Length: 526
Image (cartoon, rainbow, N blue to C red; front, side):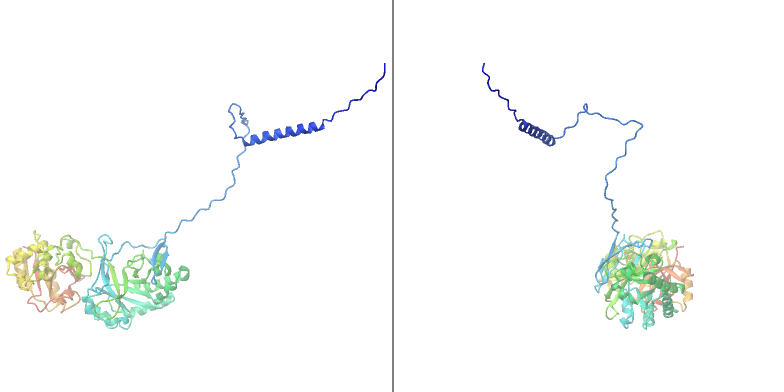
């Protein structure tokens, strides 16, 4: 057989296949990973979830709370009060803790004949007080006609201790005006303030003040420069005011501090002063901004009033009404005015405390005259009969009984009730009136008033102007003479001194000597 050439097999190359397979595998793995990430997470099945509980002897480590930013507490906004200063700028202040606060409010119901605002209380504003109007004057006002001032129903005045003090004091005193005083102080220390107060006392020596003696810092004009407590030495200012006031107090006078809202907020420590001393508050903002108590308010610096040339400061005084004694509470005090007429004719608050004492009878007219012009005698009769008998007779009924029982005929133009008719009407109701003339001495008059139950007196402002300066003839009742203080309780149909105690000596001086009789003493029925 023939031998052929044998062939050898060539080996095959598989490396590239392995590479491709590895790449495919990696691509598949990558595809699965991407799909798993994109798929929503499904809650694990309760059955498939194993919960491995830690052994009881081992406590689970506490969880560490996430770090948070610290919480910063916001301070509450202060309870600011606001006021308008003299330049018209609004200021804010905080009440001083522990300082006394006022308990009354104000309103402005009307203006007077000069266009000045008249401040009067409302029934629910401060029932424990009444308000009267006045002025404060200094040498800047020049010579004052005090009769005209008084006739304009100005009831009090605060006088500056300057070269016109004595003249102004005597003029106001003769007309029975309530008087206060003030001193312009330049003191920079407590020692200087005490020395100035002693100088002030030289003006007041031998004088009687019904009102306060006030410390008025002359540098109050600089207050507009203040912008906060840091600009004012409050402790020093407070010590100065205290030194001045305590010196006056030791001398027996009622001290007061003249202050604006700016002063109270930034000049003084009111915890040391409010409630301890009176304040004469000055503020032109319409109603007082101050929350602190005050006894007098200077509310206008450009007022006008008869008897004073040029502008004058106007004030209103806050006073507690007379507190009646038990025996005075049942005394009747009918008046000549109805409410509307009363509001138009007087500055002071109605000094009556019972309904019906101002009534429709005041609208009676006779001979063209209103009852308020001729009804004082009728009211005095009604007061006596209603108080001293078992009958209550108001002035309207008394008016018609008077005309029926006497020849009283006010339509003739002579509206005043004569003394003889007063005596006749007292007898008609069982009262005895003894008509008398003014004794030569006051002591005799006082003894007669002490013995009588009451008296009708006829007063004349031309004889003495301290009380009824505005009339040349007016009947009033006087009751309950007190020999200890020399006063009597007055029921005044014109209301100006109604239900007040006044000095019997002032009534004695004012008795109308031009009349046939000056008073009628009345006894209780037998």
